[in-house]
Length: 428
Image (tube, rainbow, N blue to C red; front, side):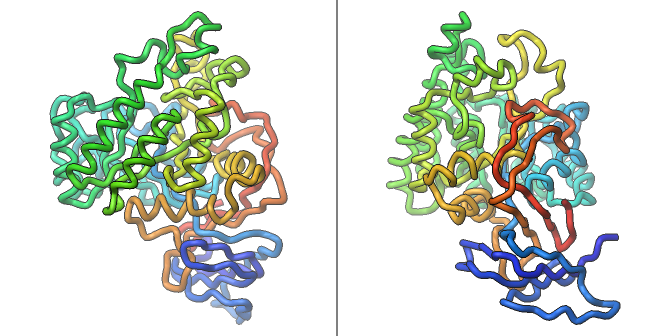
């Protein structure tokens, strides 16, 4: 078995949540960080830790993805907990939060516990959200208290909007009593023709009625108001429209309780609707890739703190799912393995944010929003660490994920994950 005692030598230790920026060593014992110092001697002997030479590399808090799909149970030909955990580790993620839109949906304590038991032996920490409503149909509220007690990381009907304002209000009241996060897929179907493709120049070129931006804007406006009314902490998922960013920015000015949080996916800050012309079904995603003005607004939102999370919305699909005609094929892109590279390429290298900010968005902030014991490198903290290079690159020819539905397959992108350490053990 892989040693649980490790000594990382001469890394550039970067932990912005702890004010750490130094060249030094990290000693790990029994799954936790025992010591951080400029030099920690290797004591030798039978009990000596395994050595990881990290000169020239960064060591940072392991990435935390609060929005991914492992398709387990029900669609494990696309992904299962084991393959999803392997993809997470390859991407530098030490903790992931899985969505509840499995088959059947995770809407009972029994189903929730089954997934958590399966996940317990994985190399990274795999958490599970439970569904807000029964079977994710948006008609009746689940027993959120029972699901919370059974170990739900939060609650979401992701993949489906909850259209009933009263049901959302009731869910927010109950979730706020537990201190739980509600995360929302904000797309009103009445504004959507062909899902996954922006209603704009490209959809018109393809002869399709796409997904209008009003689908997202209208629901975000509603749920921002409800969150401020009820005191519920919310996570607005995969924000895509510039108007949504402005709504969130204005709502945060009224939020003195740290209630409002919002995600951007690497897909949405890296690509526009034009990608559909180049990649077809591989660029079809809900909500859709929109315009360059929207992409730049998302980046500005990340830069100024309006949008505080990078989440992958890792959405595996089989080749058959993606090979149907564009109008009827499945929406979604895998994202765990390429997220760091895309953050470097499209956020850090152009100068929009620095590396410390990227770590905040990918590790520190997601952990804080979901109240996880993660996102820190400090003595006594869990040894969840990513070691990476910003000077080297990665050729994405294949993936650890069971699926490969990515427009970035075959590309070489900046950055390379060297090691992922979760619970003191090397996961990658």
